[in-house]
Image (cartoon, rainbow over all chains, first blue to last red; front, side, top):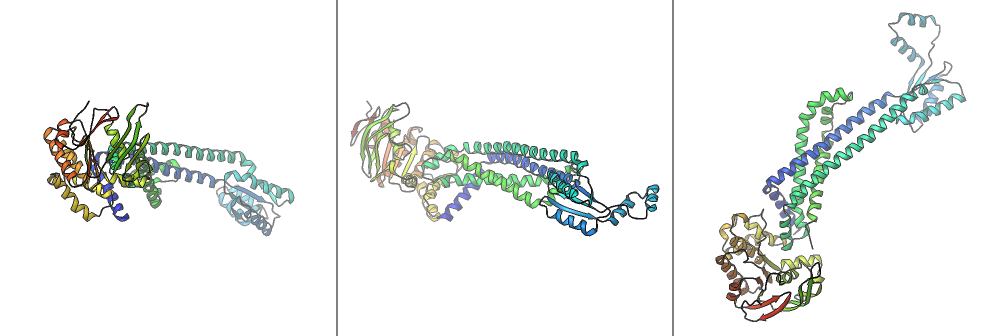
Length: 304
Length: 227
């Protein structure tokens, strides 16, 4: 009985979709636009995230140690820093490495190298480059370090305070962009979902007399609703497939431009690299939107 | 089998559509309900298949009061009552076969039974050849015959025909009435509302006359008689 009913509902869903060709076409078109907007938002969100992440990665705090600090002492500080929850990574640069780096950086400036050669010992101290998980956390890390600085005098300099203004500003920009991005995404997604929902409601409005007749001959609510939900799912599925197909040439076309705009984020690479999750989210959204809209639209015309 | 017990129905505004009606109908009867527009004929029928419920009084189908039925039992009730209307009410996106089959499908009949019964009942109403046509490809009389086929395919206990001939020419009217008589002869209770004098007079069965929501005549073998 259950199987027979399911089979009949599915069959009428497909038949209804085909026989109401024009209405179906309109619903699929609107749904395509909705899903296209949603996937564009998804990709734009990823682009924004990647760009912000890049900016975040450019920020770090450097601690310079005095010449007297031994490697063991520096490593001890490194260990303590790594124990802090805010710290993402700590990179150690030894005195020798610092010197080599200095020479490399100034290799074209003969006078500097000459001056360096005059010195009997390595004038550079070891340093640690600290990266926090969030830009807003540098403040507390810097505080931890300056507390340490007061205790002993191993640390000669923490460069956070020089960069504080820039880091704070970047922090603000990132926060604002995220909030703004989410707000715009919610607004656009909400608007397009409402439009898709209304289109399906109109499609079902044309069938309201039919639903009345089905009630009259004693069809159960699920029996009436089922075929409309199947048709709604088909709208979403087809629209989703269309969007996925259209996105391929579209992202390939704007790929180079996106790379220039966002720094290193290429939407085409993103599309290809995340095809699986894009497929799931676009088809999932389409199917859910179609099914839920149909469910709600039919409910208006059902009666006991 | 059908019993209206002191039934009153008020629509919004408090005007009674039917007022204090008591009416009993036995199994296998053919009852014509006549009266002017607005006399309360359709209201009476709607209360039988639970499209509306009485404001006062009770409607019984068999031994059960309709207002006391659960949602599931209401579906059963509607599957047990065939309905025909002036405007046919076919499903426009389904062909004739599917329209009739739909009534069997919703009551959970097997595919084999549907394949066997639908052509049979379409033959009964003389439309076996138009089985694969869509409603809009049929004339009014033919559409009404499809509606009858759909109404009787589940072999209901009661057939309700609300102005079934209102949109039909005399020839089609005659056909529809003949089919209703045939259905009644097979044992189904038939409730017919109509304006059409010649229809009522040709049936020669019980006639209930309504006026302003009240029963003014109830004749065993009556004629059309509107005051």
